[in-house]
Image (cartoon, rainbow, N blue to C red):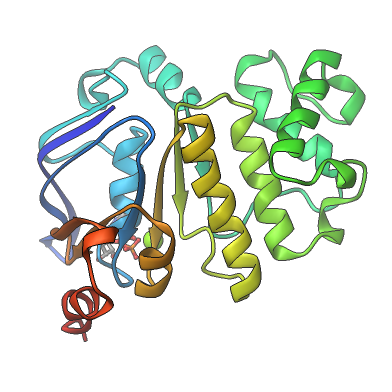
Length: 249
Ligand code: ADP
Ligand code: MG
């Protein structure tokens, strides 16, 4: 599903090269639920961007869903991104539009032309969107304005929008970083459930040890762009995780 070998990414900064990812090697199997754990600036977002071909490595190789983004043409990259759902820290919903219409935008990649208004989407898409809302437990909110929902609910709408793409891989970049603990737990429960019951592969970046330990099956720890930990959470103690984490000032 995902296989990265010695992946390195540098960005030019002040006339020198800043290493954002340093010799990253890891692989992910279908149905895995992986937490990407690391402090701010450790390379989590850059790694997720390599997973959907938004960034191309400086050296090393990366395969995602059978495609190597560095060697893919534009059409192959577009096709790859359609099979990958992406969820952001700030949900990026259109607040003035209905919940259902926001979910429908997940189908824009396979529809022609721009859409404004729920009825401009084919009925089939609207039905699929409602089904996705059902899967995140928010079907009863379909016709409310998106900005009337709580932060946690808006994040679940963003997940429903990603599900409408029928992704094989779901990438979530700090999806609970701006949520209260209870909403965060609901969103993590949802992501874990999708991995478990729908065999969706989920990679979720986090910066809190406790969240990773409570929710993920496997944790990949990043520090200064290097993988410093790659373990099943079942065999890890909180102390072991903190030890990797706390040297970071
Ligand atoms: P995280 O998501 O863990 O906070 P990032 O992946 O955003 O970390 O960043 C890792 C490092 O790469 C940081 O030092 C950041 O400043 C740098 N970086 C990320 N993206 C870019 C970019 N497009 N141009 C230059 N530097 C970048
Ligand atoms: Mg980030």
